[in-house]
Image 1 (cartoon, rainbow over the protein chains, first blue to last red):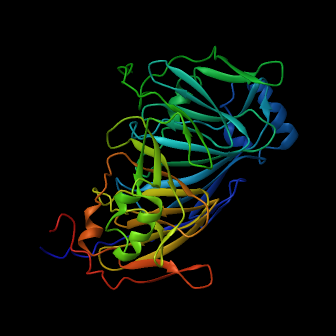
Image 2 (image 1 turned 90 degrees about the vertical axis):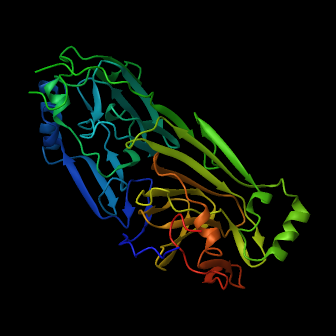
Length: 207
Length: 207
């Protein structure tokens, strides 16, 4: 029976998480502006309209997060706050990604607003999970995922995922966009429809 | 440029998470009854009172969860609903654990009620993080942790942690309980005080 040697430990994070996406006690944050989404929406002509109206420096989405360390057992916790809007028929969206370590899962728990998590696999499966306050989507590994705001208010989710997951953002661009679009349905709601420019996912790290 | 072979993927979980701890879309659940906490509270004489009054089969806490799979990248998501009460001076608590894979972290996000996450390390550090709706504690690896309900309503948290973490529940028992107790402060609030029966943590897997 031996005493364990002291293990260096990270300090626990005491956080306050607002339904507006603010995290008291956060360790980092970043924002994406409208200009950062150039090429992400299907229709470049439609994209020119909000660029002209709101300017390339207008806020598109904001991330606040808390990290305690690295290593296989660490987590990253954060909020994503995606402003509402449309570009042509498409609702406001985030770039979307597959985790660089593709088997890493993620939980998104909606805190406010109305959105959809668009999920696709490399071999052509797709899901669209509606989210509102109190709803969550548990995203297993190997699912490409993107948040879409289909409401009139900011769409706020709390996410948790393994700190060693990383993000592959290039996969969607190389495929000509995700296979499905989340578009207005003509009655104020949303629906998905196939993206005619999608060329299929060519695998991770491909040209 | 090659097409990736299809990867077997788990189905995403679309969940509804109530502030009462109910999870629509859950894949599992379990409950702990009062009798399951025999030996967990410091004072066995005081423990006899609720056992007699409420019966050993009375509900102590409930866990509902959602799992999508195994493997290093998978997560377990769930709620813990801990009923209020006291045993002698001690507030109602869960057994507490260190993850069997000790470097695995965990997020607890409070959905309702008033509680404390009691955190201790093998080498004698301790923290007590107050939680109420909208507050969270990001527990890094290597922290023993236990939920304590210091309010009058169920204390509900949403937790997320790596699916391969596991739990070591014996460590606390072998140490004579956690180093700190969460007790009433005489004015309706709570405070921590050292547990006179705590003998120090003897390391994982020790006798």
